Amino acid sequence: MVKLNEHYTEIGNNYLFAEISRRVKEYKDNHCGEKVISLGIGDITQPIAPAVVDAIIEATKEMSRTETVRGYAPYEGYDFLVQAILKHDFTDRGIAIEADEIFVSDGAKSDTGNIGDILGTDNRIAITDPAYPVYVDTNKMAGRAIELLPCTPANRFVPAFPETAADVIYLCYPNNPTGTALTKSQLKLWVDYALKNRSLILYDAAYEAYVSETDVPHSIFEIEGAQEVAIEFRSFSKTAGFTGLRAGYTVVPKSLTAKTSTNEILSLNAMWRRRQSTKFNGTAYVIQRGAEAVYSPEGQRQTKETIAYYMQNAKIIKSGIESLGLQCYGGVNAPYIWCQTPDKMSSWEFFDLLLNRAQVVGTPGSGFGTAGEGFFRFTAFGQKDDTLEAIERIKNI
Ligand code: PLP
Image (cartoon, rainbow, N blue to C red; front, side, top):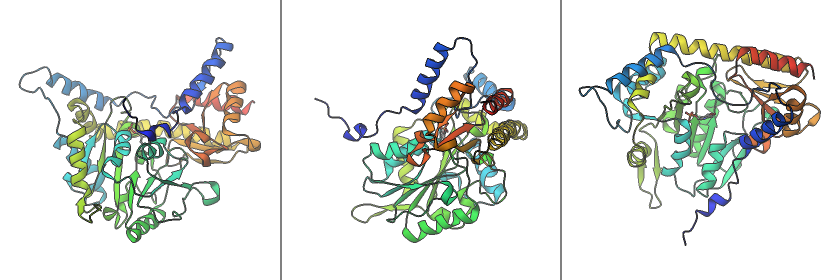
């Protein structure tokens, strides 16, 4: 009989969004014709930038001609995209990353989930709580011990250092789900911690494009010393509406090393390349051309317009919820607003209240970890009219 990876029995069902759908369906079945507005999903709603769509169409046409058809893409991404990433995201910002430190992928979920393939299962892992569920679940799948670092209003969502020195630390800023960010000086303390303890920081910067404040870094590599301690994950999903197109990239500096049980020191860059070339077959050419177009002048203008649209929704949500006397966090450098539930209600009680009394759906904070209990996440990824209406309805409860 086939034996299961036992660790899969420890992760439980991914029930958060399934349970939300179940409750919404039940409500709709009992209240025919009522419009339910979702401020819950973390998915894009606005059309993809014309510059990106045009580039994808042109690249698709190339596929119809013998002279220009393309097959498997390079594991690390086409040079045209790697060079565009290098210039716009790093060189122009004064960050010295090299082309062979960039690995184009099909998105940050795969990469943040797969990075554990090259890390030993006996590493001590620290993960912020609440968090994007991929970090905790994939480490549980591998059987690693995890220390959670609570992020709450008491510490202003800046996690305290782990009690026992961690080998690997997951940081996600701007943060999903809390919408909060770290300033450069706050992030520097983590880089210094990692340098001192010889830890590896796995830095998820999927929401980098939403940074609006000048003292908030777009990349961990803006911090001195970070290339000695950090891997960074980037995504075109929220930057340019690629949640359905699929593209991202990961930066693995060549200075990063890890040791084997016999104390051999090996390059993480070489190991990640080895991993990708074995298990990953490249991001589609047409999608990489679309991603390249994000960096064109029109692509930049158009994607920034969409981000501004979402961030206007964020403002509407934040000021609307705050006017009800509820404490809100985030929404300035991220498309998420993290609000404290009223009267010590649980996250799910507040969910039911909003659904039943305002027909508005959000995401219960407890679904992102224990420290999320008593909180609720609203997302700015909606239509403006719906967002305005949702807030009015909540005000009228
Ligand atoms: N990282 C964080 C923090 C996210 O919130 C998400 C998506 O919601 C991802 C990564 C996934 O990004 P991608 O669509 O590139 O897989």
